[in-house]
Image (tube, chains in turn blue, yellow):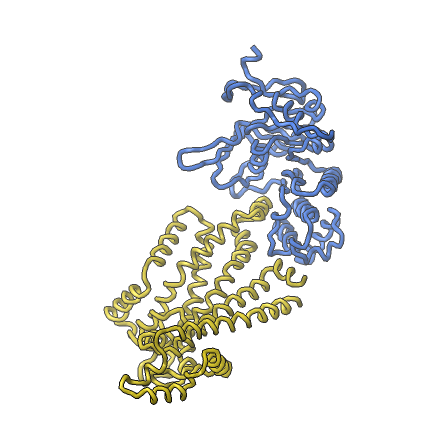
Length: 302
Length: 321
């Protein structure tokens, strides 16, 4: 590895407890390494465990979820989620900016609350800082925005507010969980450009969860493909796009819509998958290059 | 401020509704198989005398004119006279309604505060032991008849322990003693509080749970807000919204909220008055109280709309368009 990873997580498992006896595994034994200073894309279909992995990192899993991992390091330091431990400098922005803010609280209240939780500042100083931050994320008329309620702003504006909130925590890692899915296409581009710009300016590492390969191609240096709670392939963007190995990745790439008229959308063929499902012991990773690895069945190699 | 415009609009909408209700009330009573003449006359009076009596009270006139006169009188604050005692209903109501309010307002308020505290607490600890306890207490409270609980309270506190007087609002001779009032007040107050709080608690609890599943709570968590911060800074305020509706809907209870409890404790409020009027078919009284409580239902709705507009910024905005 050329760069030191900012976050490294080994053997992460998450299970949802349905009732006292039954549980469903939703994240199966995955290892994640996020290189510092990059924009890393995580792709996969709905229900593949992208968001749950992110929520496991943020420690905001649903109450009936059980999480365990063997090692979790952030900037080389081991992390524990014990109550007294310090918060990691990670922040997260969410899919739907329409519901991410409390509808009864003003924008300013949200921002100032975040600031004052971390720094001992007077209300006035916090307000000033909040206005600066709103300016930075490209909101016009920030003083006025501070006194407005969420419903008075558009979706794109609210997502900018969310980004401002996220940056006020002074994160080193920003997790963006489908930040543009709920937005118009033109606004999508604006928000993504903003994230890219901020990533450079603030020296951030960004994890971008998406199911849009177009976004991945345009923004990310490396990609992880998730399928049914596992990372099935990972590598640099070029490696994934041009030398994809895993059948699911190939299917996913085929499903990217083209602009050709009259062509039907491609539906992923799940049965192309390796016949019957394999147990964890039957699967392993094959290293194709320094950065590129793919999950394969053990027997095949033999 | 656009809120005032919105409120004005809502008040204007209330007026025709009230007219319709008054008409329905009058019409229904008119349909009843007895009228005032039956209670004044005796079967051995001659037909001419009865007709004379009818004319005297204006009962020989067509229905719509009777209604008009009745409505006009009510607008002047005159609800007519009881056919049994011949007392003015307005005077009677003017002394009895404050008594009822004195009893219900504190009970409802206590129940509301209790419900908000317990409901938030139960919602925050969903599925844990404390939640199940609160839920269990509410179930018992809902399923227990008020009159039975009142009897139990009277037996234990009033008879067995002999702490509180069982009946009335004052001891004769000490009408101005506040201490004496409180002693009479406690038992019905307690019974009503117990009657009111379980429903409200469940309401607050479910409202808390629905707020907890909102996205913004997850977002707040991801920003490291503690459970306490989420509750005090965000949820407690959002939970208030549905509760405000409840407060408005509870307004008619100020008149008819404790008919049975008041009767059991001999509290000189609307309750015993209404019950005895029903027994003796004293229809002007029934009509007055029906009209009053129907009016309060409408005003209660208006009140909750207005309060809602004040608390919820989203509604405030729509009013301005």
